[in-house]
Length: 198
Ligand SMILES: Cc1cc2nc3c(=O)[nH]c(=O)nc-3n(C[C@H](O)[C@H](O)[C@H](O)COP(=O)(O)OP(=O)(O)OC[C@H]3O[C@@H](n4cnc5c(N)ncnc54)[C@H](O)[C@@H]3O)c2cc1C
Image (cartoon, rainbow, N blue to C red):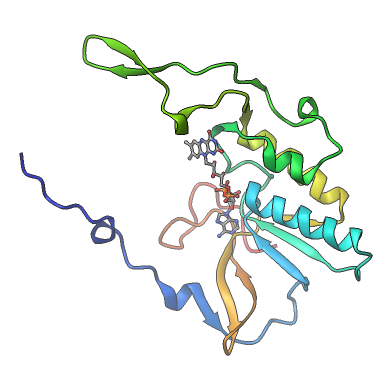
């Protein structure tokens, strides 16, 4: 057998850094935010929620926190099912019971099988594959639920805005530039294209 080394980098195009990081002045039409998270996945939403909670809890100054998302509706681009360890939810929302999180049900056990062309052999569950007592969820439902919590804390959700480039001034990041939704890899309108930037 030919055990050739496969290096993923050799099969990927170079990142177009010159168009991903651009320098220039902020346009006068820009929407101003104190803190902006790009991409409304679970990570950004949890970050925005925690920041809003900390500022509220410490009686800090009112700041504008935004989350920019390329899909038209929250969760539209979050497709996977998931098994979730609820610890982050419990940390972010200590007042909420597990049964009130956007989960579908609790995992009661794991069966792991080794599959051969003809047979399946049950093997002991490797510890890192054990999901007992975690919860089954739809990432899209989780994201929509987190979005509502974020909005209730005053976070602004900006959907339908793909970020195109990071905008820098000197060595300071000052914002992001958006682009119309639905462009294909070459920057031309694809089937999802709905027009110019709103
Ligand atoms: C098939 C599959 C199964 C998985 N199963 C599990 C599981 O069982 N348990 C588990 O814990 N995890 C699982 N994961 C991993 C989990 O989905 C990710 O770890 C998690 O979603 C990462 O969250 P995130 O917020 O970092 O990013 P994402 O969930 O990827 O969210 C990124 C968001 O950013 C948006 N976005 C991207 N680019 C731009 C842009 N240029 N401008 C604006 N918005 C943008 C996207 O539309 C998306 O909404 C699975 C992943 C996959 C693919």
